[in-house]
Image (cartoon, rainbow, N blue to C red):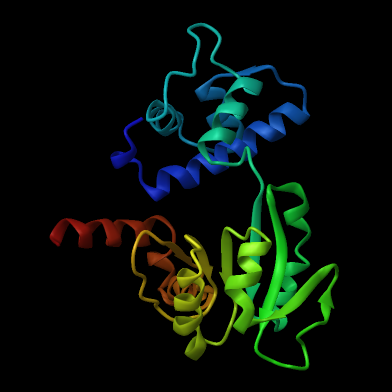
Length: 227
């Protein structure tokens, strides 16, 4: 496996492929070609073949891919053949909404603990998930075998929370606080900034009609060439 050449965009697409395969299996499909997968789910067949080639040879000439086998391979590649226990830091509206997110029930991710600094919240529960004092993060994370942390606190507290989380040995962190964070060591940080995404959409809406869609793409392509 050529790990050094595998980008995050590639792993994101692998997750999309896995979701598509799950849908095919639910329909009873046994095999699928890269072209068939691409046409059905509006993907790129050449990209599918390129992405999968990073991890091995999965296709069979004249058949395509065996759906069950490919799903099993992608599940292992993405590390989804084992359970991941998640801690959410910040028991406010976002943190509690994430805790209650129904989609987790269909994945290998389980929200095992919530953390907050508000004494009025500590000890209470959101569904079945208990809210702990953030001061006890390291101890609870160790006892509950937490391996993923989600930061859902106001921006001004996010950096100190990240430092506390990584000091406890957590290597995978998702950040919802709208601020850039500094990381040290071999920690993987993924930031989800809804404001940036909305502002990008706002830019699209602000363009003249002749620059929307293909026109806008042409301008951007031209800018890239000049740069």
